[in-house]
Image 1 (spheres, rainbow, N blue to C red):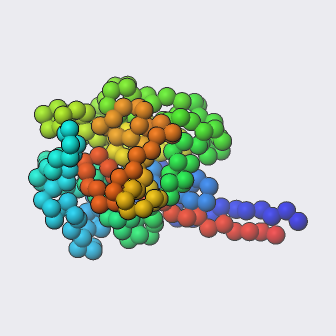
Image 2 (image 1 turned 180 degrees about the vertical axis):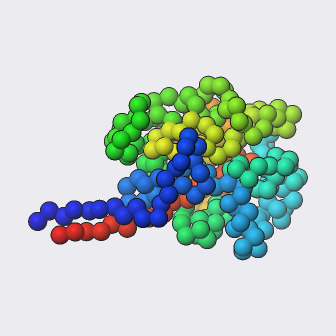
Image 3 (image 1 turned 135 degrees about the horizontal axis):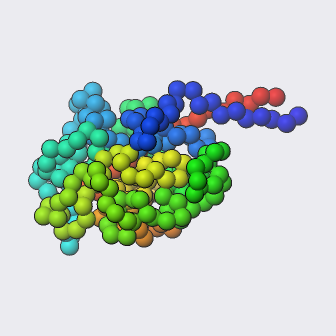
Length: 253
């Protein structure tokens, strides 16, 4: 007798309106993924509840790459560019293990590298919008083209709601955009390409994968064939993360 598998999507809120709301998750296949990167406001709730002080805070600031790694005093997840930040900006300057700990506290986990890749590049919605097709794998998280992402110089116009325009603060780029403010892409996800790199759960502490590129780089780093890995203790201005949650399956005979 045929077995019918029904995915139970109980308790996973759907997005309302054009931009994703905090804690929205998108079902893929066997898991659901945050529609936006973990925000400063979300990480603040975790830090307050757990008493967490991050490595960048203990060191006096995270880093950026300016012809070599440069520590920036006062640059932490609370103040990513040393300035007052909105709670809806992505939480950065966080190590791999700090990102993993947040996801576990939230009842989720970091995505495996394979899960992140599937969510970013292969459309799984039964009724995908125009320009995207169920079952199709695309070269960019935005689809066939990188247009609409927040990347260095070849993704189209900068988001009008970019968090910063700060050529005097960094040697290039325009900084990250608030969560959900750029064009949604494959699977209705926001900022999977550009904006900030995202930690995935793979490799070893010597080289943990980061995916999706960032505002510091052009579209080439967003491409599905591109991978960068960084030591797990890396805490820099353009690496953030999002979480996933496994979905139970009910087998009916």
